[in-house]
Image (cartoon, rainbow, N blue to C red; front, side):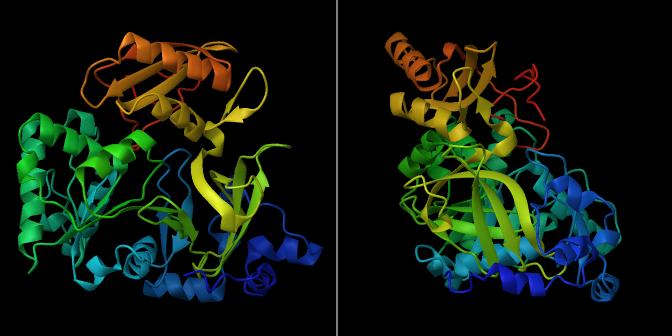
Length: 423
C-alpha cells in the first residue's frame, strides 16, 4: 500500500506558484512549517488562480481543523477529503477490506462535535436550521456513513442514550443481507458504550460488528484489550489528521504499516538524544493545500530508536503534551500508559496532575467502577517512581470529565481541573 511514496524534490516542483513557499524556493531551503505560519496571511498566502477557481466552483472548501489538542486552524481541502482517505484505506486494508466489498454501512461512535457537524451540513443542504435532536437519517454523512453520539461526555450517557444507539445499530445491521456493519469509533467512546451495555443488561442486544476501526485519538492498551475481549472481529487503528488524511494503519495485531501516498515523512527527535520523534510531513495528497515539511504536532517511536519512518512501532501522543521530568528527559502518554497497563488491566481512564518537580496525582477510573486493591496501587506507584521519578498519589474517581473537544487529556497542565476536563 506504500507504492506511491513520493520524493521531496518532486513535491517542491508542484508548489512553486504558491505564495507561502516562494521565499523557500528562492532560498533553496525549506524550514519546518509550523501551524502558526500556515495561519499567517491565510488564505492569501495559499491563493493561486487555480485554487480561486476551485473555491468558486466548490471543488475546494475552507474548513477548520478539529483542534483536539491544539488551537483550531483554517485549512483548504477538497470536500470529504478525510472521508475519501478513510474509505480508500478501508477498501484496501488486508484485514477488513471484506466489509467494504460487502457494502457494509459505517456506523460512527465518536465525538458529538462530529455528529453536530454532519447534522448542520444536512440542514444547510435542505435550507433549514439544524434540529436540536437530529434523527438517524439527519445524522447521515453520505450513503455509507451514519453518526450516533448525541452527548459530549460518553461517561454521562444514560440508559436511554445507550438503548437508542443499540437500536440504531440494529437498524443498520438488519438492512444488510448478512446483517453486517462496520463500526467506526473513538476507542474511549466505544469502551464506554460496551461498559454501560454490560452494566445495564443490554449487552445481548449489542449488534456485533464485522470490523472495527478506531481512528480519532490515542487508544490506551487497556481500552484496546477491553475491546478485543468483547469483539471477535478485527480491530484496527488509523493514524492521520484533518489536514493530511491518513498516514499509517495498524493490522489486527497492532503492527503499524505506512500509507504514504503522495507523501514524504521525516522523523526529527523532539530534543537531542530523545527516542521520541516529531513527525514532519510533506504531502501533495491535498492538491489545494500541499504541505512541505509541516510539523503535525504528533509524536512517534520506532522499533529500533532510529529515525526511519518505515520502522514506526507506535504513535505516542502530541508534542505539546510531553511531560519534562525533573531528572531529565521527556515522557509521553504512551509511556505512562505502558506503566499502567503492565500493572493492571482494570484501569480505564486516567489523568496525571504534576505537583512540583517530582510529585503528582494520578486520577483514574476503572472498568468495574471499583478502586484497585492496595497491592496493585503500591505496584503502580513503584512503577511510576522507577519509570518517571514521580512520587504519585493515586485517586480513584467515579468520573473524569472529557474536554470541550470531546477528547480526553491525559496530562493536566497549568492547574486544570479534571472535573472541567481541560481544553
